[in-house]
Length: 366
Image (tube, rainbow, N blue to C red; front, side):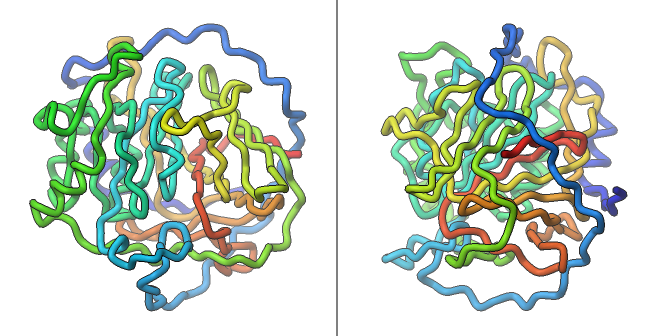
């Protein structure tokens, strides 16, 4: 099925200009033989037969007591008078379990260079955990997240070309280990570098307030609704990320959430021991292209994710799957999720995990 795509002007142009110029990066571990996952039986995933045209929507007047990232009410409207903070997480086996992800309003996961691991980005607004990490470096897909959420960024650095791109975006506050040091970041003793860098996240919020770079959240394209939607019954989802990061979700009918597993093992939060269990799982299919930006000492190059235009999407909530499309006409637009009729797909109020996968991925469901 053909798709209409609009290339991201800034990231696309710059990524093709830079050739293997980066500061000494953290070596990427050579992956061991992947462990087989025997918990899912892959079945064919239906393919939409037509690309819906999203209908026009009026920007709703935000409810000052409803979090626009989760659709949940907040007792203190002042919580929403802040900017979202994006935190870049490592997702290597040495990084797991990570700290703070149960507090995130949203979480993105994307394929990293080398095609054997993923990186995770937690979005924090309504809850700020005391620490978050392990913190790793920024990749190209993060620029699109910043544009959509008008957020601040916490990372451990980036390759020289991506650092240059970030330097052209001063409107987004950026905090990284290089330049901020011990007041905001620390190394844990239970893990080894580079998998042990953490951030005191409340201090980042305090610094933004002091610098006057904090401001009310500005997100308006996410739609939420308590009412269950019609869809295909699905209780298991397998996202075939390769190597060290295949992901499974199992629907828990008792809690109406999706229990998350990585390499067949429950994925937990180190701060509280709880298994990660989002209310929504959203899979978006985007074209992935290799660039000339070298990201590690093995020579692996950065992946450009074409995330402007339209593309296939699958939304999982309340034990059903809704086939649809993601829509983002311009780089500065926020992503919409629409059904076959071009109407917004309402997410269940709560935490959402957004899995960004290549066009040829076969997400197995049952």
